[in-house]
Length: 397
Image (cartoon, rainbow, N blue to C red; front, side, top):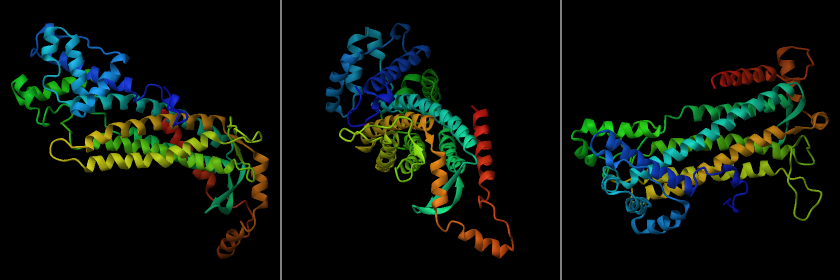
């Protein structure tokens, strides 16, 4: 059910939903059971395809309070429905944190795929905008005041650079990692089951392979796999917020340089055409950093071999940040695809600006030049540089 408190929530679909998280935890338990069978530790009769239904969600969520997480209730439910051998071997060698952390990685993978797809579409749209409006005159502004002559293409090139920077951060993320440390992160139970530490590490790697994740040493209280991913998500939100700020400003009636393709209505003022996507993107850009800060605070609260509250604080925080980023990715794609530029209005605003050639006059006198060009500096060169980078990004897809 879409969230009434966050318009646009439907765009995230099942990403990081309760159902997706529950399915991911079941996938981890099923894969681990298979790993134990394949390694010859559990009998072939222990192999099973485990499932839960949407109807089980409420019972698991309610029972989660008893132990502070949903895994104990989930395992109990799965054991009650599995045969004797699967029930005997289910979850053996794992701990609750292994299941939850690995399930979060599976959910993040889906989200990152959606974000990468959106960034690719945005780069393509921004390239077209930069090329189309490369030489379209436009006033630049600094500290909310008229600055120098510019072009629409120059502004778009800044947007393009911000999106490419965000895409670079996403692409630089290490592969999402499995969590398989056992009760205290020492893999003691897995070592007991497998016979040697090397064999236990092999079991962890096999679980990673089965789930399409990267093998990793246990990271129960070293939370970089979560915080660096959150950092990358916020980098995207920052870039979209910058674009939304510029568009919202340009949509003001007294400026009128931009129009959203499909603006929003007012409940009481028929004349309104609100820049709704820009507003919603700004909303996300304002809230995302605080969610990320909460994740870093939780990481810093790590203690002993499992955090007493810090770990628990991550789950809903990461879910909210991830869903909101996926929503913003979709909204930013639509905003750019429908963006309209009022060329005459942009030219008129430039012509009406006072004093914007004063710097040029000073520089001209210092250099002993007599040229009276449009004082665009290296704008064209900078646009070309952004476009070259965008082409390289596209070729790497």
